Image (cartoon, rainbow, N blue to C red; front, top):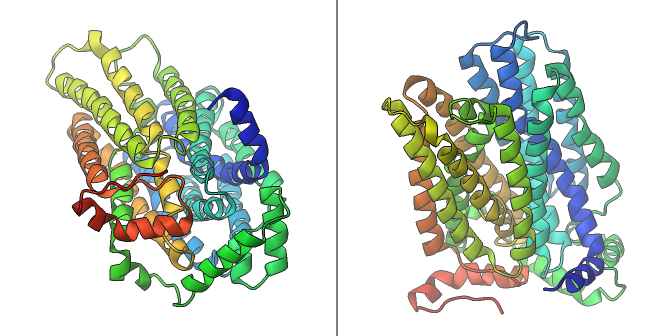
Length: 470
């Protein structure tokens, strides 16, 4: 696609991109709270006279407890998104973040840090539980993947912000500056439309028509409204529930959810991002650990832009395979370095190798594992259980993140960094195999077509028929 053609495409779908961009500012908001631990923990553990005195063990709880809050946030999103809509529960997700930053800025005891991190988790779970649904429902078939990829672009921007600002300001100042996230999100998203899918499901056809016309920048939306209405009627012929996810008809869908949740989180990205400065302090380099963290954040930010342009051209499946393979190689370099270092072998001259390995990991992760799951999750379930599916993904992800982040610190302190890195390496290799065996291609398809593909892809694979997009 030429540059001029891309700008034409951007102009055509600009309202859809604008709504998606505003919605994903919520992701920037919650990921800032997640990445906060990388620059904040060294301030509490190593700097003299910190505002809150903690131990390394307490630090690991402060980092990991946010995942528990994330589970509750996902459940809350699942309970409200089909009753109250996508927009207002989404806006409400900013409130715990605001309260959390105020508590951190004023904290003089670790109890406030624990409470703030749980609140952050609630917002994190709500944001990730709602935004894939919202984007999946407001975007056209041809741009849905690119719009969903904005989720990860904003996540990486949040990481870069915390990594770049955190090391150079005080603990309290970092909290106040991080309030930028909820301010940007609330000041823009309050003007965005409610999902036409939700409005049609509630019988509010006139509002749905008005919102869809704004999103499509076209008054001729009756055909799409009729198709959506028929899809909703088919979906609500049976009442949606969490139990329905486990019906035989959705077995293939659940396999994909498990692969995405376990594969993505067991790569260790959350642990590496949460303890970035701590990990980099163990690598011999001319750069400081803070500088290496900034480089890591900048590389992620730049790299994650590419899937936005590629996901609707190359496809979901190839990007996931390339991402898994590259992530495996990058983690392997890090695992080997930390193993040799633990064996008292002089690896000081090769610190750059492990740093390059970690950069390769974050670059490869950004190309697929970080972005494509959200595009897939916004497509593979019918409307009446889509929220429950996202809640299930979030609950699984939250439980795995909590275990990985908590055990990372324990393993590093008692055995060495090489142990979790080998676990991450092997897990990512297995993810490559599972993606190859179980993830079909769905790019360029309507939501109904995607669900038909998922339902029948196993039979087609056994017949050696490859499902490819037009």
